[in-house]
Length: 180
Length: 92
Image 1 (spheres, rainbow over the protein chains, first blue to last red):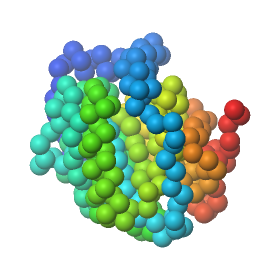
Image 2: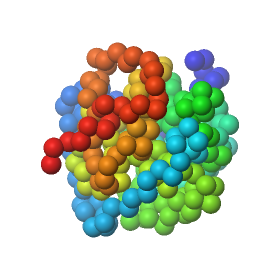
Image 3: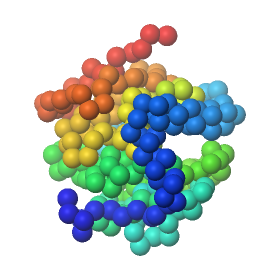
């Protein structure tokens, strides 16, 4: 993929970038990254998750289903306002026809090097369009959603519900949730 | 709506209490795999679609068996057949 077809990244602190490369590229780094992730996420999840898990079976075959992606990898349209790097609970809308070159990644908690080479790693819209063309899925939804890094899971509840309503209003059948 | 999630940290996958969760031992930023590895990315989507269709109860966290950078991914022959990796129920 040549540079003109590739997504861009919002720059982050160079030292932080080196730390993220280490976290991604070494066993010790990955263990450290997992530890950080657990320390930050687990107490919040334990407070916020409900005792009853929501459950909606598929209402139609996948070959007839409308499918959408929600990602927390900081992906957004290049022309949109970037996420705040430190913490941001807002979302951005990404239309179904978006090309990789139209996208930017704004996130400071993972090594984005490979995702910038192939955005499908964190936002598989191109792969979904192929599956639509092959008849594997019914339709790629008109709108997909990107979130950035949020330090507070609680702050994501309201925007999450807004995204849920928009997906429901668009008659989306299946939502694929992809993390950073 | 039906949802299927991916996760890269096992304890977070368990604690999220999502309706359907697939967990991978892969690095952050690589939930669908390696750049340019279309067969790998399609395999993960196949697993997600299978779980959407076939998960038998809410709250399942299924660990996918793919080793990082050490697998080959055969083409998906029948997308309507359930992925073995994504629908095998983990022991309680």
